[in-house]
Structures are given as structure tokens and as C-alpha cells.
Image 1 (tube, rainbow, N blue to C red):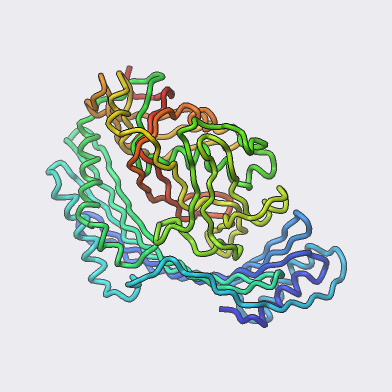
Image 2: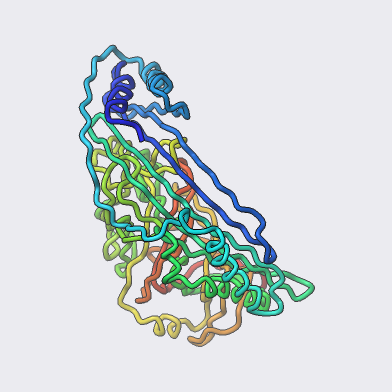
Length: 461
């Protein structure tokens, strides 16, 4: 990584025309993906990403430039481009960087890149073969074993110089079930901020079986009826609704410019009193966890909503300047090509007071969303539309026949008020979150919850 002396010179150059803050961000990322389709290895892809971003502030104005030329001359040219854009006044800047070492709470036992490729292929085959053998109607299985080794350096004009390393592993299996006339799919993709020791607790065969089981369930499902009804949303990836419909609206990226449904509501009751929502980047070895954010701040546990009351936003450095509040360690980016913005890490609704069996029993007629899929949301007004990957009708407090084609439609500000029962089986689900600063690993999560009423878009009457 770049030396302190060189980073000092880059920062001084970036600030030489009047900037009041400057930062150097370096990335070195090594990635590997092994892909298996139809029982055969389709590809083994290795990638290396290396580059530097230089950013300067003047008040709330920002200028950002990147380079892959890591020579002293190339880096100073990059800093000069930033300074030339600021072009406010001439300034003589002297920077004395102090190295800071942050605690590493995500110990890695076995780096995936150090393991023989045949061992990694064996893990992938175990998952995919288990999916294929689950049922004779499983027509095709695809699996990916993904490993990322991501090192960063952050240095800035507040005299910070620090480095960090993120190692992540993910196993993703997709299965297609067919009865000859139609196909249905299933998916499961656990991931951790771990090396191959992840598979000491994540069983590859069970990963494949979960994907295959979902495909078979959907193959036998009937079209979902549409209408407004109570919905029980299960744990784990069910938390994607809060992440998308509410979480993005609590990021300074939108709050600081008045483009969020949650603007100006700090200290107000915005959700049912049973709802406590947290963004916590400090969970050891969790998929979305970080030691530091991409601006050099310590990761934090941020209580966003406590017993229905809005307690905090997620704030990056630019958002801090705009809002006049401290950073919450939420500045994240995919890599050096992106300027950081406020982003989530591990975001979840905490366990509540209700028993899971009571939640299901309380619904006379409604939908049980056992597994959620992707969707879309407008952070300005919180309007969302999410697919249900696996759903069942509830009748008289009993989970009955599976249904397919269901979607949940509503607004974030309304759904968190209509969550009137919160269970006790909190689980996290893994995903990749896309925003203006690229795609970053995030966990979503919740226990089983009940939404008293929500519009269900269906495939039948």
C-alpha cells in the first residue's frame, strides 16, 4: 500500500488550491468465482482490481478523481486534477499523518485463495449435487462459490493513515424444477465475512437442498390471490423490505438533501412501538460487517428506530457536513472507482415480544411470505414493490397451500406502522446492495413479523 510520506504529498497537492479537506483511498481487491452448471465446472474466474481515488472538499462541494497509475507522478497528477477543479485560492499545506490501527473483529482462519482449487470445487459440487438429487423434477442446477479479498488504505487531512482488509466467502445455488410443461426456480445463497471456515457452520449440501426445495414448492403452487390482507413475513431475507423501503430513506445520502420520507422526523414516533431497527457493522464475521468504513471511521452499532421512535440516521462524511451531525461510520463504496456515500451494513428488525406460533394463529385469512425476493423502492416517498419467492395461504391460523406470483406493494412509512406483531427468531440474510457508490455486501434481517394489512399483488383472483 502507499507510504505515509506519499499520501501526505498527495493530500497536500489536492488541497493546494483552497480545499478544506482531502482524502486518499487505495484499493487492492482479489476475487475468485467458481461456477458450476449442469454438474460441470463452467468457469473459474480470477480478478484483480487496483487503484486510487483522491477526494477534496470545500464546504459541501466535493471533487473526486481516480487513477490506476500508482507511480508518484501519476498519483500527483490525479491530485492536481482535483486541485485544479477546486481552484479557489493558493494554499500551502503541511500534512503529518499518524498511523492508526483499528481492532480486527473478523478473524480469518482459512483464506480461500490458499486452499487447493479442488477443495473449493468439492464444496461447490457437494451443494449442487445435493440440489440435483433432491427430487427427480430438478432439471438444472447452477452454483457459484465466490471469494473476495479486499484491502483498503484511507489517509486524510485530519492526519489519519490506516489500512484494513475484508475477506468474504459466499456459496450461491439456483435450482430449476420442471414438470414438462412449466418451470419454477429456487435460490439460496449464504455468505459470511469469513474464509473457508464458513463451511464449519454452513453445510454445502443443505444449501443446495434449500434451493431445490423452494423450486419444488413453487412448481406445485397455485396462483396467489390478490387483495389487501394481513401478511406474515418470515425471518432472514424477509428483512429486505425494511432495508429497501425504510433503510435507504434513513441514509444521509437522501436525508441531507431533503429527498427522503424520513426527513425532519428525528425523535418522532414513526413505527409501531414493537419495532426496533438497528444497523450494526460490528457483528463478528457477519456478511455486511466492517472494521472501519471507507472513510476511516470505526464501524458502529446504530439504533435507527427504538420502540417505534426514530433515533438515528446513517451518516457519511459529506452527510455529516450537510446535516451538522457526526458520522456514524456509514461511508461505504464498492471500490476506488466510486465516491463513498452513506450505506447500510447489517440492518435488521430486532426480536420482539410475540411468539411465532401466535403470529400465524392470529391470521384468519392472509399470506405467509416464507421467502422474499427482490424489488424496487422510491426513497423519496418510500413506495415499494417486492416479489415473494415462496408463499403460502394462511387459513384459520394454519399455513395451507403454497402460492406463486405474489408481490407486496406499499410504502415504507406505512408498513412500519402496520407491523403489529414481532416474533423472536431473528435471522440475517445475505445480499448485495446497489446505490450511487456501487454494490456492497449487506445483511438484512428480522424475526417473523405480522403486517396487519398490505396490498398483495397476485397471479389469480
